[in-house]
Length: 342
Image 1: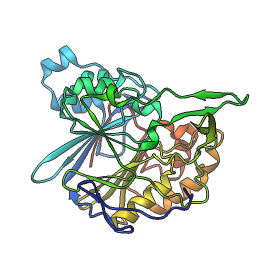
Image 2: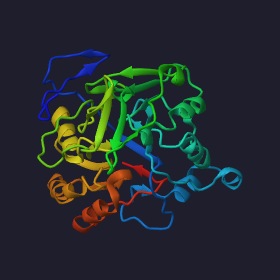
Image 3: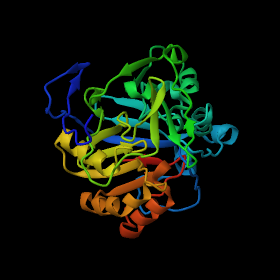
Image 4: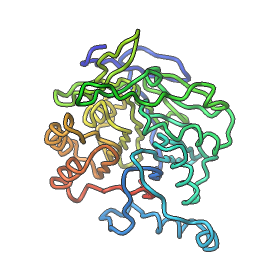
């Protein structure tokens, strides 16, 4: 597959339409995004934006005092990622879970501590097939207690994968859960943009690589036919795209192995919406081979000019700091437990 792949598709009810069609993403009245798992916690810092609510604040407003006294506990962090996303429109609301963290019980435990019922989840979307994004999948499915819950995946997530160590040895990643392990949930496999909930959420599908500085993960490999092959592009990397009325696009990445700039460009391209209101998630600017792209990424983010930027997970402190230095009023340093209301 070429690194300059520029074709995209529209998928409706599982059917692929002609290449090049834009996705007819409908506007929503509002979005709520809760950080169920991320690399950091910070329960004291203030935020300049009224759309961001710390966990103690929003739980006090939404839960009864007796529940708070008996059940509330502060959530914890790990090297993993998970967001609970709710969309609202006049006629209804819908809930998805975007990734499930690293540890088997981390997301389930944090949800319990914050009074979040995972039975509300109508669909699970996995951003890509790395274990810090699917580690809690099996136990999340058990906690949801829902039959036939769809889990949107890409075929590449089932690859045997690893990264090459400095000494040349291979560190193999844990295996992706099998169909049997996720039953009675069910995998729904797609490489193309996929519309959810009356066309109000897009799972991006494969993201074209068009910038000259977002070059994937050079140490990343896949195992096939008895040997390891370079697999830097990680084509199963996808994002969530939502269009909020009177605001614009919300772009949500898991790790942005495609590059957060490529990801945002693709969201604009397939929706035809140019205004980007918020960009959030892992930007993958940490690590020796990724930190060189920080300055170019910051420059492009300035040009995109979103109202809010929330760098999480694999962005790293150097990337976060560089973005903050140039756009201090726009950047939110995420904490597990934060609630974002757009």
